[in-house]
Figure 1 (cartoon, helix red, strand yellow):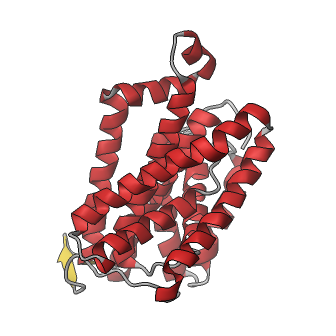
Figure 2 (spheres, rainbow, N blue to C red):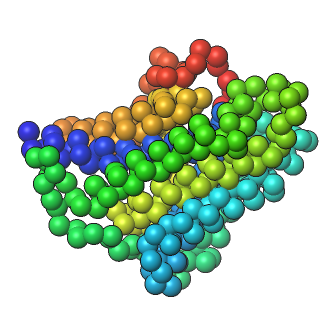
Length: 294
């Protein structure tokens, strides 16, 4: 029972991070019908920015978190202006997707150039004591509890942004029907720019929260993209609640598979889930019935 409780707690805390990554993917896909294959590298860049501010420059963690999120937001806007918008106006969707793949390699190379001299794997100091604690009868790492609470706050802020702000409502309207949004006078190109910025900012927040639990390295974005993409596919690529649900499910499934079957399944569970969902329910658990091209 103790093992089950520990695996469940770890799965929930890890799943919260996957949910944030999936959230950024879904936001971009809902508005543009494009899967941002560079999303993992935006996550990676957010983590390295936080490392620079907090570890190298000695700034407070909350300051580093805010600045890393802002930096990731600016990076997302840059991706829209430099890569997405020019190609969407002149090229096909396949060209956009290939550009995103190329951008992911460029960002990894840039990260190696900027931070590679400090070691292949960089450590981020924990915010609280690394000693485990008992919470509701479950043994859990203190840092995991901090991450879970922080992820909950980020998700709440994100929901409020969509429900109560004009920018959030514009993004929802554009995602639901871009043609109708143009007809009522919305600047869809600006909405797309904001969408990429917000999606990247969410990835940056997830990176700052995950950094104390893991090591930072330039290739970390790929695996996190796969986990986030699996969560988005499981929940539904057009469903924000589905992204949250999928993230938690992926985290729990990974931990249970590693704990009760074999540790090797932890890394391949996301791939298996993607294949199964795409075969039996392509729209995901909470996705709509309308199918769209990925």
